[in-house]
Length: 235
Ligand code: NJP
Image (cartoon, rainbow, N blue to C red; front, side):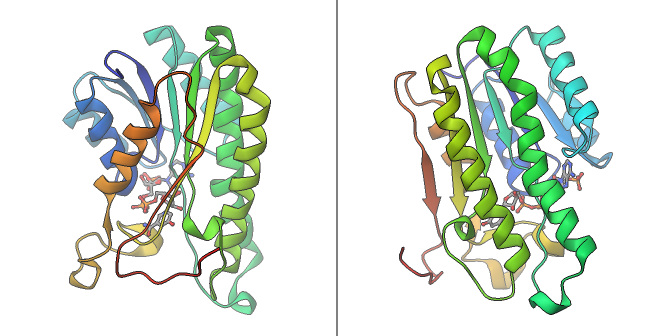
């Protein structure tokens, strides 16, 4: 079903985004992959036929250029995965204004800019799916993550509102909200023994494939997934 369709994935150089890129490639999608460091080009070498861009999701001009090049090359955009994100976890009084600003730039402004950039093309097509990798802490709060949690609550609000706005154009907007995933997130390393029972990046990627390949008449609003070992408040 996704075969031959065109996807843009942000934060595809490692972690969840890299797994999403591989999963979508397996479905036969044409891929445009974005990362803020030059690492993204190594991914392009692995995934033949993909186009890679070193771009910052918070930079509107760079993202508009990526979208314009995508349309020029592939003629359409069927899927945007807003996955790029960063995490800072510390008590509120130790969180700096710079950290607060950067979290909101990448996690919230980046989602806004990416979404805004693809909508004119998707409206023209009268179809498209926008999936944002948000977080379980976009739904409930945790200690020592106030700034990060605030960004993910913002993402939930943004995505829900845009979903209502673009539904008449045949465009679907949803979020995937994972719990703890074994990646490089927040200066971690993938594959550490203490994270053996966490979600794998591939688990989240499969959720993206499910959401993106739902039949056209169906919107999967949200997928929440946790590792079985994680405890969390039921809301
Ligand atoms: O993190 P990581 P994840 N512009 O660090 C890229 C959410 N999440 O895969 O820029 C463009 O392994 C960066 O590439 P580079 C989380 O909030 C996670 O876990 O080249 N790209 C890299 O490819 C986030 O939204 C957990 O260094 C930018 C990628 O983003 C998403 O999952 C739990 C960028 C980050 O890879 C993926 O995070 C949860 C920018 N400005 C939600 N800044 C979890 N792991 O436990 C960063 O609830 N990147």
